[in-house]
Amino acid sequence: MKRITIAKGDGIGPEIMNATLKILKAASAELQYDEIEVGEKVYLSGNTSGISSESWDVIRRNKIFFKAPITTPQGGGYKSLNVSTRKFLGLYANVRPCKSLYPFIKTKHPEMNITIIRENEEDLYAGIEHQQTDEVVQCLKLISRPGCEKIVRYAFEYAKQYNRKKVTCFTKDNIMKQTDGLFRQVFNEIAAEYPQIENEHWIVDIGAAKVADTPEAFDVIVMPNLYGDMISDIAAQLTGSVGLAGSANIGEECAMFEAIHGSAPIIAGQNIANPSGLIQAAVMMLCHLGQAKVAEKIKNAWLTTIESGVHTADIFREEISKKLVHTD
Ligand code: ATP
Ligand code: MG
Image: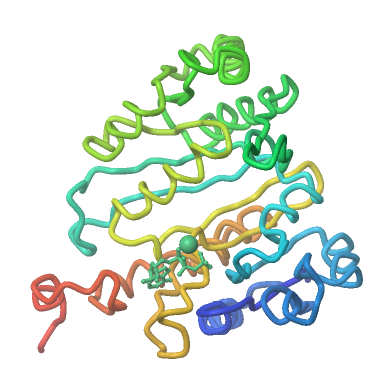
């Protein structure tokens, strides 16, 4: 039995977490849970970090954190708990697989199978912001050689382990010659150590356009934090819905697993949210914990459900469901 920390979060968080926990139980996952309270309630009680120090202790002790989406109140000096968790736990790699399930889920890109590996601690997310004058504010982009080495190596090791053929790097090194230049430089150095895996580089703007138009041209893509945030939402949406993708946030000691989407308060409480993203995150977590058999069982049951035409509203298309649902 592995003891992990869970948080049900805000908005659609509790519904999709409860659904996922039911599935984990039915599949006999060897897990025990310590539940902590994070997010809106904690913020609004006056704690601007959205989490108590006791809860941090629980997360650190268990090392594995399974988290539903939370709402960060706008303004008012509230910090994003997602960003602080990644930083405090040293979760340097954010892994986001985005794969089409055509013909079962409608997409313009049936062959798409991209995994985005996003640097998770540095870049404009390092939180170094100042006010220079009354009218000028500034945010610093931080990129370090060790940070680039860890994430790029992770991407190539991932490609090797999952038998992927190519790793692409996205940067804007034609403009940010030092910061993105360093990322690309390290990419070239590490790519040379993996001659069996193809490598290439795209400037991020045209790369993003190419992802939107021809995602099947990509395999694994590694990039700095902010580009990874944006492009992974686009990639998930291209497969059918942001509600479909899960992510793993990996560090040396700890790991956090979550859906890539937010708390979607607009659709909360109506029992219409798609739990797939959090289910995918659970599958990634079970693989990470060495419970591959349970992971496979859940993945297959999820695929069977999708293939049988049981679809939430975000991916529901009448013409597809008619074809899929058996009437006999
Ligand atoms: P947050 O501030 O937490 O990011 P949000 O509403 O921006 O909240 P997003 O994930 O960005 O949350 O969701 C944007 C929209 O995408 C939602 O309003 C919803 O329509 C759709 N969406 C996101 N996740 C799901 C899901 N799991 N199932 C169905 N629709 C979803
Ligand atoms: Mg959002």
